[in-house]
Length: 351
Image 1 (cartoon, rainbow, N blue to C red):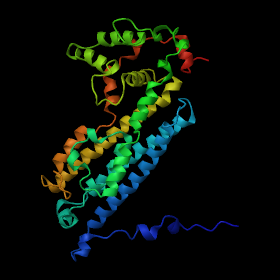
Image 2 (tube, rainbow, N blue to C red; image 1 turned 30 degrees about the vertical axis):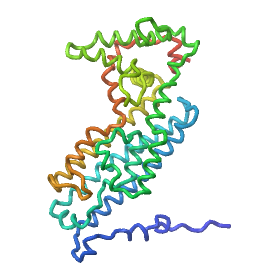
Image 3 (cartoon, rainbow, N blue to C red; image 1 turned 180 degrees about the vertical axis):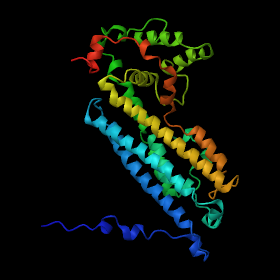
Image 4 (spheres, rainbow, N blue to C red; image 1 turned 45 degrees about the horizontal axis):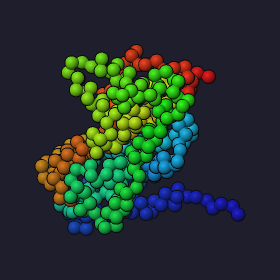
C-alpha cells in the first residue's frame, strides 16, 4: 500500500496553530495591535520549552542507565542534546529583542485585561528547572511558587521533584569516574595511588595538588585554603550541596586534563551545563530589565513584586553553581602534576 502524500500545512497542523491567538483586547471591543505579538511570543516560548523538555528527558533516560560508557555514542548523544538546549536558550534570550519593540504605552493598552495571568504560571518552565536540579528548598519565593497554578499542574511538578534530577545523576556519574575507582590496577600509577595518610582523607594526588594550589595563592586569597577542604574533602560542611567531594574532585580533574581524548566529551558535558546556567541567568536578567522598562516598580499581573522578585530569583536560581565554583581551584598548565605513562595510556594518549 503506497504511503499517503503529506501536505506541509497538514503536517504542521497550521489550521490549529494559526487560529490560537485570541486577544483579550478584541473581546473587550478595544483592539490593541501589539497584543498579537505578545501572545505569539509567549506561545513560541512554550513550544521551545516543550522541545527543551524533549531533549532533557532523553538525556535523563540515558543517565539513569546502570552504566554510561564515557567513551561511547551515548555520551556523545548527551553532549549533543545539551548543546541543543544551550542553543535554544540563546534563541529565547534573543526573543526579548522582539518583545522590546513593544513600548510601555503599547503594553498598557491591554495589560490590565490579562490579570491574573502571568508568565509565572508557566508550569513547563518550572518542570525544566526541577528536572535539571532546582528543587523547592532552593527556590526564591516558595510561598508564591505554585500558588498561581492549577492543581493538576502542581501535582505534575511535585511528581517531577520526587524523581532523580539531572544534577543528582551527574553526581553519581562523576563519583564513579574511572581514575578514582578503588581498583588495585590504579595503585601503581605514581601520584594516583589511593593511599591516604593519617592527616588527610584525600588521595595522594589531591594532597599534592592542594599544596601546589595553595603555594600559588595571592595574599588576598588565603581563605581559599579552607574552601579547598570544604569542597573537596568535607562531606558535612553544607547539607544543601548537590555534588559530593568525590564528584567535585572528578569534575576538577576533567577540567584540568581535558586535553586527553577520553576526557574531551566529559569536559564538553560540564561546559554545556555552565552554558545552560549562564543562558538561564541571562534570560532572567533580560526579563527583569524588560519588566522594569515596561511597568517600573508596579506589581506583576500575577501578583508578584515584579522586578524585585525577578532580581532575587536571578541571584538564587543557579543550578550548576558548584561546577562553576571549581574554576577557583584551577592551576596553570605548567604546574599540573605529570601523569604517569599508565594513566596517559588509560586516558587515550598512548597506544
